[in-house]
Length: 190
Ligand code: SF4
Ligand code: SF4
Ligand code: SF4
Image 1 (cartoon, protein in one colour):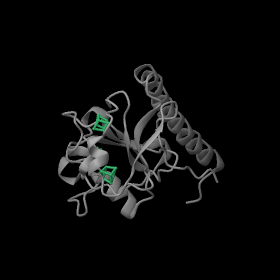
Image 2 (image 1 turned 135 degrees about the vertical axis):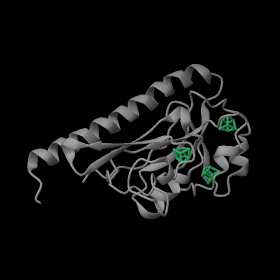
Image 3 (image 1 turned 120 degrees about the vertical axis):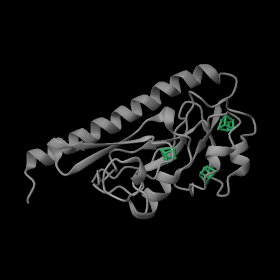
Image 4 (image 1 turned 45 degrees about the vertical axis):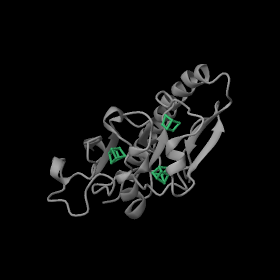
């Protein structure tokens, strides 16, 4: 069925708002970070275009719970009914049952947007995320890559030698300016 213009505008507004909200969250973390890193002007970050979601981010951080988390570029997301970052390769059913989910910790929330039928919104419950990258790999392989990993600077200790960077097989870890501590996926504004 053809979509009416109001529906399209509303959806576009929703996506832009969510993207802006995500950036606001990251901006707040940047403020916290600047207080933490006065003596050093750079911090560690993952280049999402180079990361191959190998799994090392979940296990090599010096913190018991990795400082790396999945983030979502809402403006890129297709709001798919079947999200390859959310569902395992052979789900029993297309619903929110734990047995159907790819994420080992249930950190991705799936919500039906009844006003935007048939769209589904996927949000990350960050305290549950361990940065394993399984969802990132799924979304990159079959989706549009709107899920990606970032070092969260409200947690990261900004170690001189990041143990994940040393274990990273793709060279995705970089030192970036402390006042621009996130490397976000590029959004197609077309
Ligand atoms: S699959 Fe891994 S990286 Fe993705 S949300 Fe779950 S714990 Fe985080
Ligand atoms: S710099 Fe240290 S705390 Fe931060 S992600 Fe790397 S190992 Fe973890
Ligand atoms: S270690 Fe490197 S390639 Fe592996 S998930 Fe982390 S950033 Fe990506």
